[in-house]
Amino acid sequence: MLKIKKIAIFASGAGSNAENIIKYFENSSIAKVKMVFCNVPNAYVVTRASGLGVPVMIFSRDEFYNSNKVINNLLAEEIDLIVLAGFLWLIPENIIQLFDNKIINIHPALLPSYGGKGMFGENVHKAVIADGKKESGITIHYVNEKYDDGDIIFQAKCEVTAADTPATLAQKIHALEYDFFPKIIESVLINLS
Ligand code: GRF
Image (cartoon, rainbow, N blue to C red; front, side, top):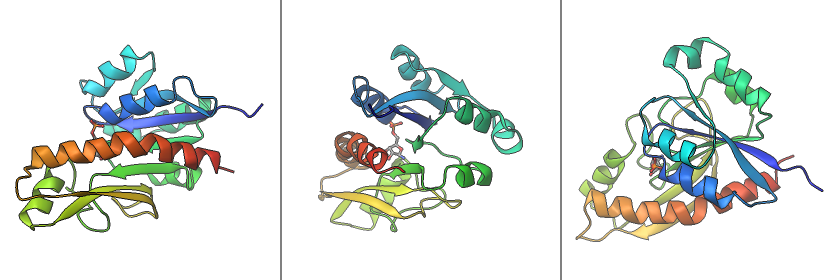
């Protein structure tokens, strides 16, 4: 029997991807979401994760960058893969080094376009529409010390029409995220050394 891999999700916001991933792996023999890490105490992801029986660890900026609280928890829980799902802070160097090629992020656009600091949530979709782009999509990539910069694992595209608003484009992007993110996480886990 292979050991079930342990996932930690980092999220700062609504957490619809976190919920989708938790549910996808609920009865999986490959992996399980062990814990959600969140930097925003009143974020809706906290309610969602707790409702699904997944423990949540809240941490402050100071604890994240100037203490071992988060890293110690990751080690204590024997986390195999960190999944960023709408997490808005850069990951500190010591966590990146310890989880080399074991941290992945989802970005709601086709990187390397529309990435980097400030490019999150509606900002991304507004910029894509303002530029008159005919397509957008999702990018799942490894995480390094810069925003939205690590090696790309997977991309999927959707059409952007003249009728799209940031809200309708966000819906299309979320649909792609729900469809593909858990499957890509699963394949990354299967290939983990
Ligand atoms: C997603 O669109 C994801 O691509 C981005 O942040 C959003 C998070 O949405 N990184 P939710 O919190 O999962 O609902």
